[in-house]
Image (tube, rainbow, N blue to C red; front, side):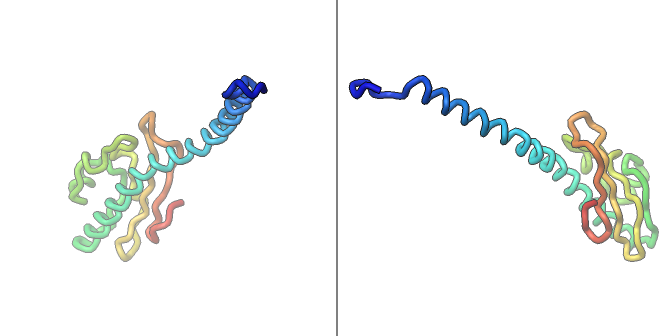
Length: 131
């Protein structure tokens, strides 16, 4: 490089662009996983609310209420509304109370049905673990 010219050569610029492209290509799969996790956050919040409602219902009536939450009778019994469970990625029918133990703790399974929902299903166990 001639000392009277100040700036970068074409090769230096191409190398920088190449490095940036490699870093961007490495980040896309990492970010995709975070997007999927953030979609599940909506379901996690609703599942916790459902567990609390089932436990309250069990404490008041002694009945173990199970089934999909797109059933109006179940929603009314739990004092929930469809709007409480309707979100951007999940609908009330995506939530199902699988079982209720003797203490009223419920197992809740979530399976996304909307096109933009994350794939697969997750279950919130009565102990509070996700499987």
